[in-house]
Picture 1 (cartoon, rainbow, N blue to C red):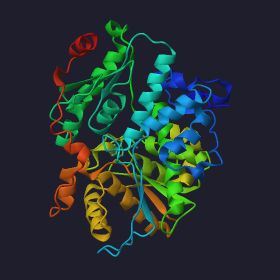
Picture 2 (picture 1 turned 90 degrees about the horizontal axis):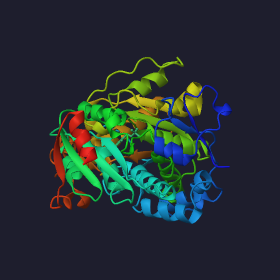
Picture 3 (picture 1 turned 120 degrees about the vertical axis):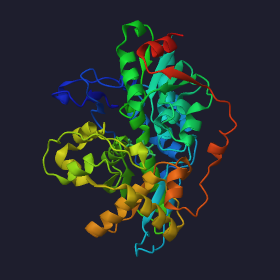
Length: 450
Ligand SMILES: *Cc1c(COP(=O)(O)O)cnc(C)c1O
């Protein structure tokens, strides 16, 4: 039996039959405002360690989740096409000027997809699944994916969904408020994607998206979203965890079991890892690495079941993790329970200055250049080791390529040339397609109906 999906807010989950994956994927949020969680977690197949790529992990694992809804051959082809880039595990070694040893830390590089962040994994797979279900339903109207973005998510979604039959993407970003690299990634022309530079803030963009979903004048336009609460992004985000362990077994100083450190904001990445662990992956402990937005580590350190109120978000050099109220917190608590969460997950909050210091020290000690998000992860591992004395090998997820954040890297390492990546250089001369948009519902409505 493949899982059904129930709301985190359903009073008695076992009394509900739940919805199919296809329905959870297309509706995003449950009707009661909760998040969809699977009503069971299929065990990893016994041959998962034989996988030879992350796509191969997907071909082995996902049928256990989706065979009731997607033809096995179609699913295999879809996963192979979505996960077509390498996700290598890189061992670190060396001692820094601060006396810190990096041996036993392995970086899982989720940074080699088309937009150079881990979000490519979820977005590319979700887009293909969505296109498949729309075709199966013989939907006649294009489904419009409406996304407000402050950076990373927008380009991953635009790139992952571009050119998928039956899907159109409308992207809103605040004009002049994204970094030069992000702007280059957002503005590039893509088939089936319309990008708008909104004359306003990111909050304005989010307000416009919300208003569009409630706008009766748009009732005839099928709208959907692709944010990190969608189950369609979570399932693919399980797959690289087993892939890290497959590579870890063969690595220098190889391991069978490990801790896994996840640089976190909305906790969607970590939730994917927890699902893999519930499926039987031998993760000893998860380390949730947050920047100055420390709601979750504070919750873990507290011993109350109910969280306090969510603080407003603050801006940091690891801006893709600038989240005050992590959306997947509700899901994690449902999957593990408050007590289970504290057993499985250790967390810490890393300030801006320490993030830059760690980026520099790690580079000087090991030659490894991390992005600011990955640097928060490295700092978390070292703190965890110092606090607990636990020497279990630890996998740190690298969530973005340093070339996406040249300003921060140069601030930490002024003598180093700004990092670059071919995927970003290629965008310099690519044709752009971006239009200005007033921050009003009327302007967005006109654009959506055009
Ligand atoms: C989105 C993002 C994160 C945070 O992931 P969550 O699933 O929201 O916890 C971390 N690093 C980078 C580079 C990201 O783009």
